[in-house]
Length: 205
Image 1 (cartoon, one colour):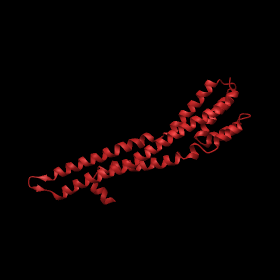
Image 2 (spheres, rainbow, N blue to C red):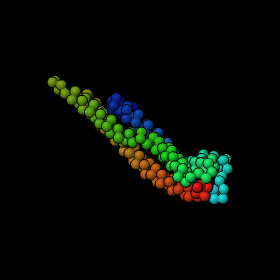
Image 3 (cartoon, helix red, strand yellow):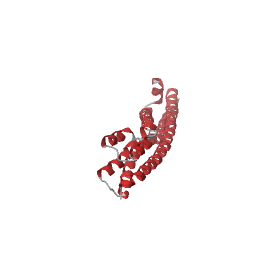
Image 4 (cartoon, helix red, strand yellow):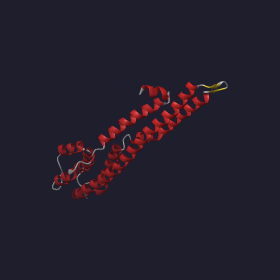
């Protein structure tokens, strides 16, 4: 591996940094976007059952908020109604919308960075290719070719191009996958908040 890095020259170092960052972000997003951390099964049904007759206690609401992102959204509505009985429905809807925006922000954390790496990696590989071409042209002298410099230039060009694509392709695939998953979660969060809002209308005017 070290010999490959030597052959690729200095342009490989930004690509190595991108690969480490991309891998760390992919692992973090896989962990954070698990269903049980965003939309645990039956959580909404449990909340609807508990709040059907009366509002949950503050301790129960606190535990709900710590449960998952869905729990945070649902808990925001329950806290708002508990803090302001007979809250107008329009104001309660705004509470849910604001909590939903916070949840979306959490879901999309680091996505811009991952997308930037997917876009920048091929460009960094292209930069390495250009550096390699400069080395190749530099090997051409009036007295003939410099084989060592020619081989080094070819190595820089090929290794950086290949490594840039090796980083960009999986980064883009995971970026698209996470985007699709986030869109599904957002739709389900909106539907869950709307169901709880419908049940909480009995406490609003």
